[in-house]
Amino acid sequence: MDPTSIPKRQRAGVLCIHQEHLLLVKLRDPLTRSSALYPPGGGIEPHETPAQAAEREAWEETGCRVQIDEHSEHIEKYLFTWNGRLTDCATHYFQATLLEEGQAPSDVEDIEILEGKEWVPLNELERHLSHAPDILNGVRRALKLS
Image 1: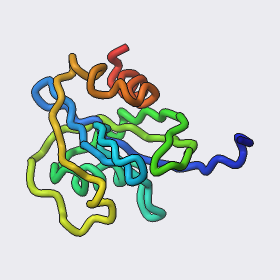
Image 2: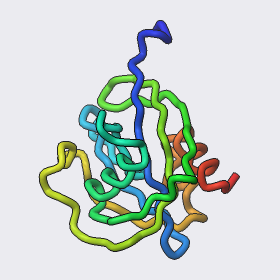
Image 3: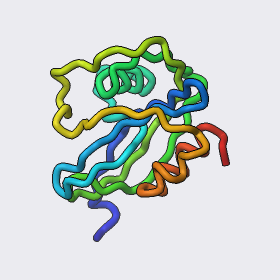
Image 4: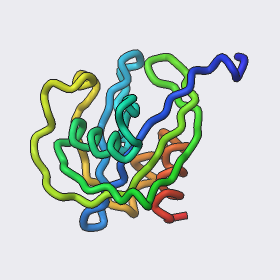
């Protein structure tokens, strides 16, 4: 495949640590139907900054209100396959603090792929994110764990 033909996507992701646990969401790929854990995140809308998108995505996907640390921004670039399509991603990761947990909105666009949230111990990230090595390595770099 010609590398210039791979679609590009700007994303924002949230790395929220609370009591030595990282907030992750369980997502089901629409094509393969396999489920896996990922940091909450998604596309940056035209009217948003990456930090605003990260905060919105955390709320929509987890029901958690978080406060983003804009100075913690770490950008990771990687190729990712979802729904049978390869995408060239640039994810703006932000560390965040949990403000409150609640119920995620029920009218979000990607609700059919969301299967819940999990608080994963930081010392178990390798096991829970090993299915996506580029994301695991990006999370470790963003959190300065490697």
